[in-house]
Length: 123
Picture 1 (cartoon, rainbow, N blue to C red):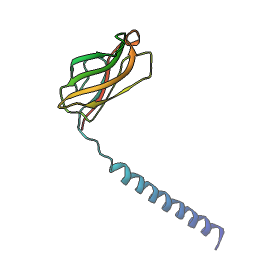
Picture 2 (cartoon, rainbow, N blue to C red):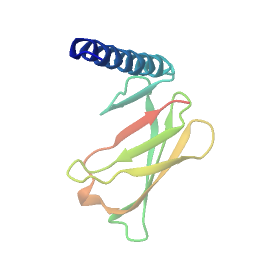
Picture 3 (spheres, one colour):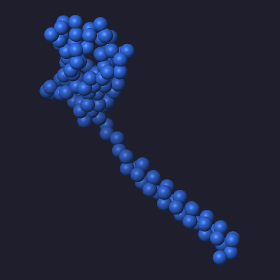
Picture 4 (cartoon, helix red, strand yellow):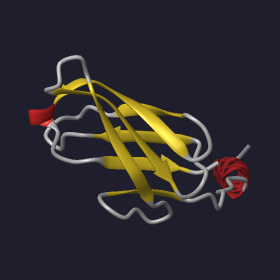
């Protein structure tokens, strides 16, 4: 095989491998689908969800929060809250029926609570 023919063959192999790789990548990326379920993150009114009927339950020590309950205006499958903007603690919530959610606050001191931030995503 002459050097020119070797270069041409090598270029062809590289182009073929690149074409196969790009085809696979394109096929994989185009198979991703997004759902139209509501989701949101924010303070106050959250796009996609409205939070209402907020209720705080005190721990045995009344200077601490045992749990928080609230109602969303639409179904959700994943909900977490944050009660102190200076901490990275997020509390997992569980559905307690309908659109009502209950979140254990692990006896967070009232003095540390500075907000109610709700993150929710739909079904």
